Image: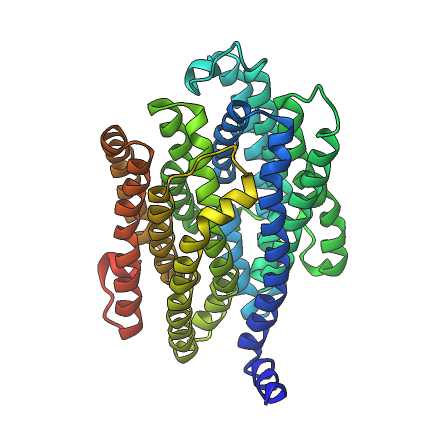
Length: 448
């Protein structure tokens, strides 16, 4: 019976079979990466005290912003290249890859230069609410980390190519290798007594860069027909890439205002020390979001392929499967909540106290995120993201004042309540938009 089930699993239509294989491999890769991420917390705490670690968490949240400085070109390439592959137009695919790569170089290097000028005229201690008596050379640490992550993003476009080719497992492998290398370096640093925050920042940021640099020649030896060259840079490809890319950019920026500013808000409202329990709870319950994203990720480019070929039956069938899967993850979150006190004790010991109320609200937050992700990936694959972008901007505008008000009223958990409230908005609009598009009743903003 098991053999029959496996046969059916891997002998479905070509698109679905590829999804199943990617999900299976990605589970192993993401599981490995998830374990490494969990191990990085105690390993880093052997290098830094809780205050220093809280400062690093704040800096690392700022690093997320660099990921948006490609004007959305990464996700724009993902969709447009997937369309070209679906139409078997590899010449256009190479033009899209080349145009994206050289535009990324120009954009990222310009941003790094601007950041250098900006950080030299900004008091990072005041900006991040950090005590200069406890942390040395904060401006240097911030710029170094931002610059390395910026260069990493130039080469990280390789991952978007694998995503467009419906091979997210390879993209996940590159990410996991970066985390693993960082963990190894952190372990080595832990054996020294004079480790600084700068050393830790370099370990975290330079490790992924090395992995992506090594992946570049390997990728374009395998896919020679997509290898970027300046000869294939095509200005005509900029408009379609930027038109879709700018919408992704606005959605990314707005999403980062919500996600990345949480650490800053907690630091300013309370102390960098309070960032640590929030982040530990987020990482623990966030495992479910990581796993669900592993499953959803292949559906993005597969949906682009299906939408290009007008295969609506496949899209509907896939969405139904994701809905059932989502219910299973709700059950997993309930079990994780019950086990959380024991898990925290084993994971970080008595170094950090995490209230049960924080765990409860964080689990609810993950339920909302998973529900929204279920439909967001399908909508992104279709490419009609105007409404999603607008709603994300609205959420970002609403989030900061709401988090400040609730934070002052309820403490750190007030910030999580604000997260839940704002993310519920897009979770519901994503569902409504998909149903309208599928029924052929989407008009105006619902169909753009």
